[in-house]
Image (cartoon, rainbow, N blue to C red; front, top):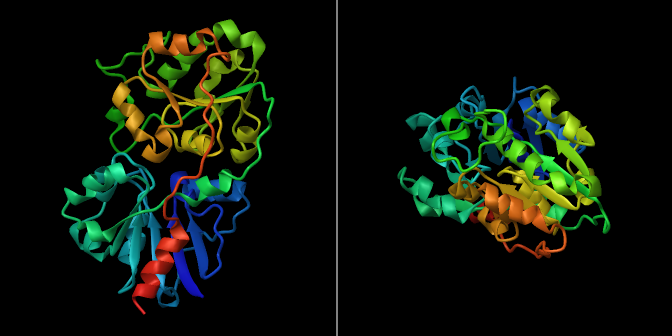
Length: 333
């Protein structure tokens, strides 16, 4: 058995660690911040103490990135000596911003770059990273979720919030290119979309149960002004119970939309700019409805659910985490 050291502090990176088979690889997971809570919600064991670790005990290092410029993953990389290191970039967007958190010395220590989307390979090649060091890895969690049996006759519509900030917060605030406005002069991307959603579904509100699902990095307090519209809200536990009893999953570009698509659910992405739809993993984009202005949003719900498109789940052919790591380790023997 090979021993694999994993460090994650962002919930997105944990998607690669949920549903592991662990046949030939022994994963030792260390987690901080929001990733720790997220792993706990799925019952996955992890450690938090990074002190006094003997890095010589591990054969491979998997380091997850984060969208916070206060993250500690660069420091973890600095402590690893002469070992195989893979940098796990869990998002198909703002790849360069995450890599920019590493100085040149640390960048040279990275042997492999694991990406979830073919469309972001160019983001690394412009930084001078050779293609043979870049590997496409499908999040293990998506395959795990594809086997979850969902409730056939659900009447629940769930709106999934997401954080309106990142390394560059301007990317998540309203600008002159927005085609959605909301109703309360909001400037935060998610709240603008949420307000437009509330307006669009007014006609069908009595026919469905509406649930507000809070992103793991957010608190319910940020959405107090909107709770009266929803029948209930959820900010605890993992997404499986919610997704398996869901008629329509609605959000912006969070990973949970790709998760819902992997389960064969009807999914709607609402973005204030058309191009932001590309922030969703490209392998699942074709299975997600997308609207980006008031007219398209209201038309989607105009005759809902009769005219909704029925998107069936299918198997995405992509190399999973364990297979990728094992292949790299065996090639070194």
